[in-house]
Length: 104
Image (cartoon, rainbow, N blue to C red; front, side, top):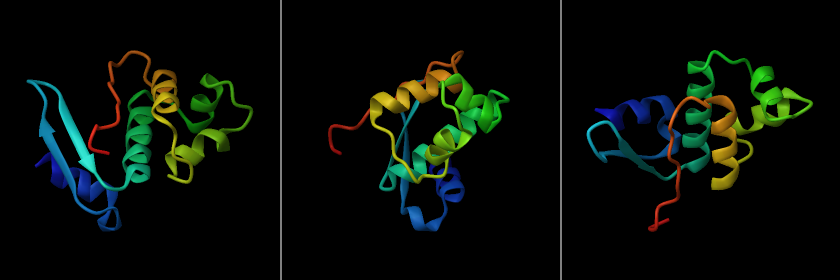
C-alpha cells in the first residue's frame, strides 16, 4: 500500500518504488529516481512544518528561495550530507534517518 502511494505521488515517469517495513514505525523506500523521491520528501516535510519556500531558504541562510526550491523541483539532487542539512532545517523536530543503500 505504501509503495502504491509513493508511485502515485511520484508519477509514472519515476519508475517503480518499493516500501518495506523496517521496524514497527519505520520503513525503507527503494526506487530508481532519486531526484523525484528527494523532491517529494523535502516538499512533504516542509509542508508538514508549515513553512513556505522562503522560510525554508531563510533557515538555510540562503538569500533566495530559489536556491532551496531547486531541490524540491528535482532540478538539483543533494548529496546525502546536504539532504541531512536540508531536513534538519525544515523539520528540526523530526527524527528522519536518510542514507544511501549499499546496493546503490
